[in-house]
Image 1 (cartoon, chains in turn brown, yellow):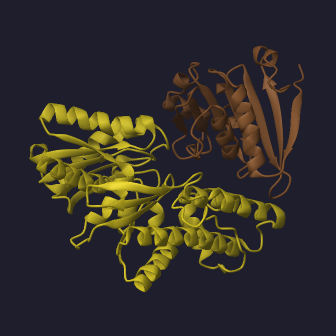
Image 2 (spheres, rainbow over the protein chains, first blue to last red; image 1 turned 60 degrees about the vertical axis):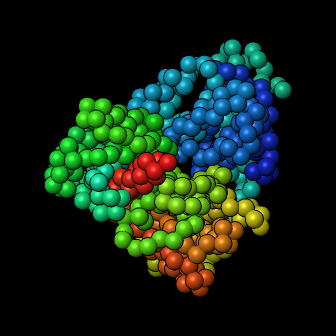
Length: 155
Length: 318
């Protein structure tokens, strides 16, 4: 079945963050957000927005490239993965990733395309790409029937 | 007093024996980049299993190198955070087991503070309070040190660490891994004034860092103009922008804390241009600057042992 994508244009990192915040407000424990896009397209900025939307202190979220996963506590806990340094998807096994996917919090995965087989059936896919130095094309797709029923993109 | 240091926070597994917080008797490191022949093969990145495989033999080698027996160890110092969870666990489990079995006290240390403690592994007199800058692949933090055992964070990066942007930009420029040193090498041939990349200072007073703007700007530059002709210029200009921010933030911290002592630490502190610029700054301001030797800038257990020694002796007195 063809998935319909919502395509938006962000004119600045600030706008990207605000969009992330809007999405963050709609998320529930157990939701997964897969972020896909080249270096510098704003994945971490978007994640910061989601964190804000989840009620996590504004400036706390950083790039987790180095440690692969960072945990933040808020009204809903956030598990922020960054698979940038991952060479093989199997390395995820050494992180005990299942624990994070167990539904207690929201999971964000930057560079999600590196671990396609590890993604749950239901997730929100967000692809970011360069238009020019400041502007980004952001495409949002919902994967999975239950998540679709919630109509996140309509809001 | 002999202190055993254990460091497994990331890719490197390291064990060290340090006497009285200063004298390094052994500092053995097994890493992906510098694999010790003895242990054979490459240690796979991120696999905590790799730490498990080498930690026993590294411990024995550390004892042999330092010519002491395990009974002579009076304290175990182990990195507790921050780092990769699974990796940290190996070091702390090893330390706890040894502590329990041999009745040796154990102290847990912070990895970032340990990077600054690498400067204590010299005989020189360090005057406090001091400002400390930790720059590595995973971290960029400014600290105020009231003493060898008392450190407080003044500022940190709000997005990417300095070493992280070096690595990411190196990848965009198709330089070989590890990206930091490759980029530094290429930058030597370039003109640091060729391209002006934006430095983010986050206001006049902030002691925090932001490097994702510089990163994006370089990436977009390469996208727009290609990287064929002027890789060296791009690398040199990028490096200059990052270092300019680091020096400015250090200047602010030093002025705020009214101190004349500056300590550096972390992998990026072995970057020669950074060392040179910090020396220039220190000389102009009359500041005592301490930078560990390049091997002590990387993740190692000697720095962990040193910090552990000072933390333990401090707690003993009170």
